[in-house]
Length: 307
Image 1 (spheres, rainbow, N blue to C red):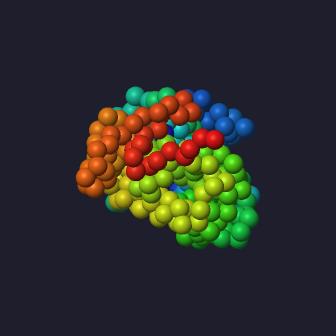
Image 2: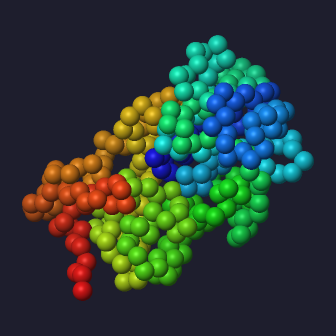
Image 3: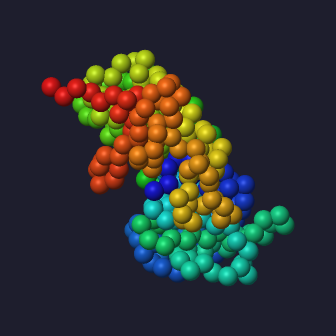
């Protein structure tokens, strides 16, 4: 599934091409893609028509567009799921095979006038969500200066790149739990935006085992992990995210290329680059993890001793 960098790449593209534009009409081609909108397809289409996309905001993996023109503050949430894409297209461009929702936007001389939601596997979707105040009074996420957040995203913690969080809050949140470190950083209530790929990369960079119990984690180790999370996410964002197939693309359909820079994820049986640089021999191992896989180095990410 797309993680913070991939979703931020989409947010930046939407901010450039659709922010401040009027939705002239909305058409749902597959009702399954608006199943989270409780009032149904007709209400979704009717409510969006005449609204302006005031801002494009992201917290963690959640993406929403604040709407102007409604009697109550609300946002259009776009959940990408496993294969969702938001593409900006000209109206006469051929429909994508898995096109689910089409938004016709007000004309702008330098930009296409359709926003399309495409989703092959239909795990994602679009829906309207009320805007609610943030608990801490700070902006809801990247792209916003207002202390409000889509209610659908209000339950998640601030994300890795959020300027309104710090290492101390991550340390305290981790120490409150008694679980494996990797499970904890994948918990969107601890820190949001981290998925399986970047968890493995950050843990490798920090030299920490994902099997460490959070109750034993020390502050210097959390500082190292937090710095690694920020660095990995920032570098991935600069590279346009990680794309392993044609599903993870930005609003113009381009894929990211951070997969070329991965040090742990997907490198089973290959030499650990840090150990090799230090004159040690070690290969990356793969272990089953929550129905997926974890990748780590058994030498420079030593596992905790089990008592």
